[in-house]
Amino acid sequence: MELEHGIAETRERVRRARTSGATIGYMVTTGGLHSAHAQLLEALAQHADYLVVSNMPDMSCPISAGGVNHTTLQDALVCKGAGVSLLYAPSEMDVYGTDRASLYNVTARGTTASVLCGRTRPHIYSNIATHVLRMFNIVQPDVAVFGEKDYQQFAVVRKMVADLNLPVTLLSVPTIRERDGLAMASRNRVLDANERALAPHLYVALDIVRQGIARGRTDYAELERQAAAHLIDHGLVLDYIETRRAADLERPQAPDDELIVFGSAFLGGARLVDTLRANGTQQGVRIWPY
Image (tube, rainbow, N blue to C red; front, side):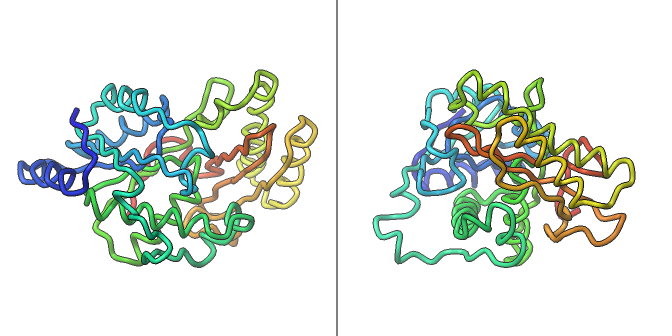
């Protein structure tokens, strides 16, 4: 595995790989890599020959893990073990310069950016879209992988790729979980033992909605109310639980809509986020354009 910090050097290595006939696969990160990232890279390797991971510790960018320490050595070990060809680790100044306020940015618009997490964090998805677009422009991948734990983030990137006609195929991988159902996330490291024992109840709450939909129920608001009550009864502070269409994050409108159950809750000092495919294929990588 090669390590680069500069934009020009990274582009040159990618150019050489593409010239040799390789398909370029890419995953964007801001550190705190763990076994779920390795599984995302395993999925990416099924669709690309030359794997690139960007790893930029930008605590002002909401794509980061909420202040989790940037562990470059551990991240490099995860990447090397997953067969990554190039680890691109720029500084924030390399990518954004010194006058970030004057830079051109992407503005994420519409339902995909304004609902769920976007309601209380109105600029989060514009920042994420800007960061991902900058990384796409540097790496110029053929295919990029995203985990569905942050499905709203994937939906925003998917819409940006479509609206700006970017030549990138996107992969989405179902939420990767611990044995007790908790979605794997860097922020889980800040949970104490008691909080860690309670955290899987977010998944249990989402599964209440999923099971109801699997039985043919369409009273989504009542299912969400039951799921919220489960969370509150187990000591989590509800942010939201909502069922939305996978295609555009609008509310369900037809029985055959492909649906995602979204959930967020606060536990101690952590904000947990999770999603669950509510119908259709529960497993397997989705390739977009579909």
